[in-house]
Structure formats: C-alpha cells, structure tokens
Image (cartoon, rainbow, N blue to C red):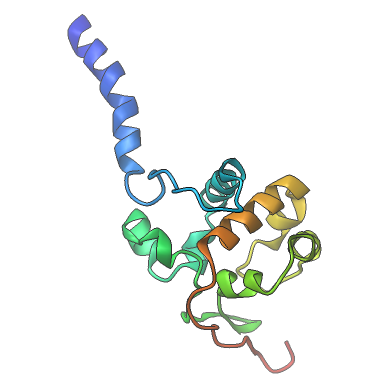
Length: 155
C-alpha cells in the first residue's frame, strides 16, 4: 500500500504536466530586443486568463494542439446575443499598430461588448498588461482582421 501511495505521489504531478504538453509548455526561443522573462510572463497571463479561448480559432476545442504561431489571430466565429454579433479580434494585428503605453492605457479603460471579460483587463497591473503586450509583439503580426461587430437594432 505504501508503494502505491508513493507511486501516486510521484505520478500525479507528472500527469498535470502532460495535460499542458504542447505549445504552452515549450520554452520560447529568444529573439533580439525581447526580455524573454517578460515575454514568458505574458504567455502565462494569456493562458491563465484564457485569452486563446476566443482570440485563437479552434483553441476552445483543440487547446494545446494549436501551434503557438497561430495564437491570438482572432476568429470569425460570431458570438450572437442581444447586443448583436461580436467577433474576437486579431490581437496580433491590433497590438502591432500600438505602442506599449497605448496598449496599457487602452486595456485599463476598455469597455467591450460581450463576451469579452474587459473588467479582467481593467484590473490587471501595468506590468501584467505590459507582459501581455510584449508576448503578443514577440509573436508578431499575422492573419487577417476579423469581421466588424454587427449591432442589434437599438443596441
């Protein structure tokens, strides 16, 4: 019985690591001009706040099978509700046209349509928002713009 307990104590943490295998656990290669500690912190914030669930096509269904190179490129899936139809933006294109201070200021004051949890961004520290910015800049611009929000009449 003691042997089985010991085996479980060793294997359970490893099972957790296997769950996150794939692009979220592979160390990011260094790039000139980037503080990789900050970039990695940004990646972890993107994962912890589930940004990929909406802002990466197919991530909700396929998770870590989506290559890092395809992260945060937006999705043309429309979220329908009383507000109309909204689309998760291509953050890589959006951020590529912003400076870090501009991004942080925008994120601190964002009031977006559902389903975007904008209050989460509003509450993040300047350092956390800067780390997300650096991670997205590290990934670089990619993809196409998503469709514009379609407002419900009167909404």
